[in-house]
Image (tube, rainbow, N blue to C red; front, side, top):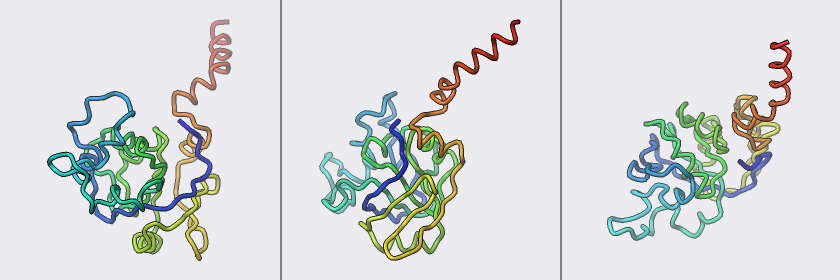
Length: 192
């Protein structure tokens, strides 16, 4: 995982509510155990027609979406199954953060464990983001704030341990391995 301390990016807006994990990455693409290439299949049933050609009217296929690292979605993002492939696909596509007024618990936890920052904001901030697609925003993970043009920074909740892991670019196993010397010293004292 790459450390995340701050993100500066334009936003891509998908105002749909109840975007589930099967819409994010359809089940037929779950045959892989790696993240590589899943970004190409992100929102596959919405991005491509039955022949596999990109749909010109889908937001990720539009030029203004290219290079955006923040996805703003409608309420209840990531509901449905617990597939870890959903945050993998978002990350492989290039997103670093997702924003909504409500993010499903399992999806949020899978996102945090894989280096994708899920942000829950209040209804007023969310309405502004939905109404201003492509806005340049700043996310500061150290202060857990989101800054949008012309407004005071807005705080967002994040678990301190998850924040630590994201800022240091480690997952839970990496965190435990970083404590290996202390673990070995403890075990040596127990044997004595």
